[in-house]
Length: 264
Image 1 (cartoon, helix red, strand yellow):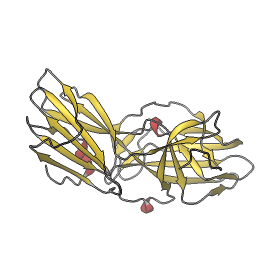
Image 2 (cartoon, rainbow, N blue to C red):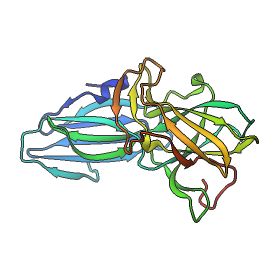
Image 3 (cartoon, rainbow, N blue to C red):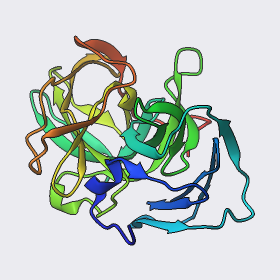
Image 4 (spheres, rainbow, N blue to C red):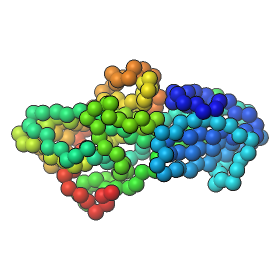
């Protein structure tokens, strides 16, 4: 399997011979997975400014890498990868500061870097997960009641066609409705990505539709997520479940109109 350019193929089972190393390039991530006699090895690295890579290749050498090792007594000859969302909320910025008038709504399309989960064998025992892109840490909300998040150097787009062709990103369609009687002004948006599922589209990965309704309560809003498949890009197959499923609307701090000490 050399130079695999259709991202959907990345999530199918991959047979690995003894002594063989699988090399995966996915966005900025380099991932090496080596099969030994009764053990498996994994190493990873990230390359700056490499966002559009997507390939799988094979080698017989392990190379001088910082390996992690798993010893397995049973016969295991295949791996399986699947994507999942980051394990914390993610802070994103609209293309410019937003002032949303009362009783108006706006739809954003947000590309969030996926994590790659590595599983082994017929029952696919999970051994590791690796981010496809290293995100910096940030704090969202007041010092005393905020939360630790990832800061993402990207923007929320208003049109699908403005999204960059990054295969490692999951597109989150997210609608904001201002149900208050005053303009909603914000420069940052806190996306609770760990509550989202991932679906396979023809060209991209997609998350289920999110919606935040703001009622004028100090940047808090009611956030709900659609249960069905997002109606974009022919999405049909579930690739990754939510880390923390949400069955009803939660009241969450979603918007921010000032910078904090931990801002990026």
